[in-house]
Image (cartoon, rainbow, N blue to C red; front, side, top):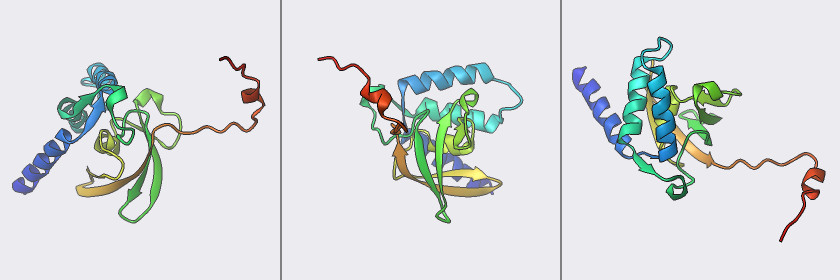
Amino acid sequence: MNNNKTSKQAIAAFEWHNKAITNSDYHEILSLLNNDVGKPHIAPSNFHKLFMMITFSKKYNSANISEKIIRLNSAFILVTEHNKKQLVRIVLPHNIQNSSDISIYNPIAIACLGAKEGNQVCFQYKDTLQKLHIEKSIVYPVIIPADLTDLLEIPYAN
């Protein structure tokens, strides 16, 4: 059993080195972690995993990172092993607005942050290794207004 735990830790550490985050996400998450040290509502294991992930991942300027990389506030479609799909958006705990938003402290968020579209991610849930597939990253969701009148009245400047 100890060997199994050690191999899972080695796999997790390897995955951290294969992830990429923006410098701004790194600093925002680090600030959150500094504010939340020792708070009882944060699971220490999730806190530690998130810290390790941001520490060992590759850091990029926002302009130099692929749009397919999952970042803070990225929306994406996750698919379970049973082919169930769910729209998800990773946010800071105080920015949760709807049912598709998950806290950065959620094990799914920790597994997905820094991964990219097409990747399979794994996380531990109730002593079982869960696998999810990131089907599609929706970096810039298109908002279509119900009425185009407002858009048509925007002054055009050369």
